[in-house]
Length: 220
Image (cartoon, rainbow, N blue to C red; front, side, top):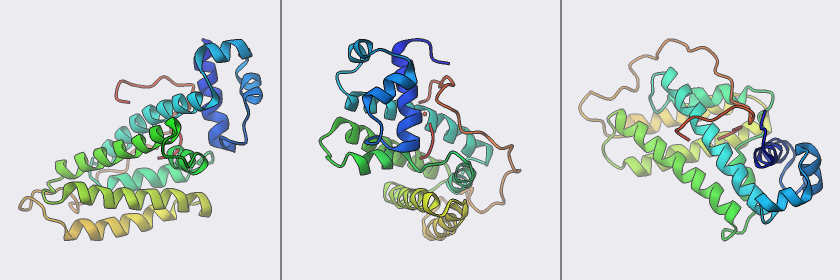
């Protein structure tokens, strides 16, 4: 449980913004949920938008900590991304990707919160590119990573609409077709070798849990 005022505010923002939306939750609601006074709020954040930036940063750390571990447990291949997403989509608290949700609600690309959410997506593309390189894909790796992120984004939004893991499975099938057409180093690529043993279900970390050094909460 967060103890200092800033941590309590960020936790309240993560929980309420993710569940109900940024615009639907006002400062008074955040103060009530966090138990922090108004004066203390403005000592830590100049505005609600500044709190949104902190929320996105915390979300990103927990998301990537969780995703790195979930993908590694599934063999560390690019397609393992979609298996991890299927697990996340099956969670009762899944409300989409917090970064996408933020960019929809705060559409101005010059806004700091929008920029933080866009940076989260760029980090996602870099991570996918690392997985591709590790699996032996050598040509057009960045473009291929962007294509897979496009599938991931679409699956995240569709899963919110359908309330099921099926979009992750459909996206994985499209990703497999893209990967099969891509160039591998000889036969050294790991995709298609047969999966790793089914891992234990890894719960997505709540905003109350500490985050690891690699940087990662609900969604993308």
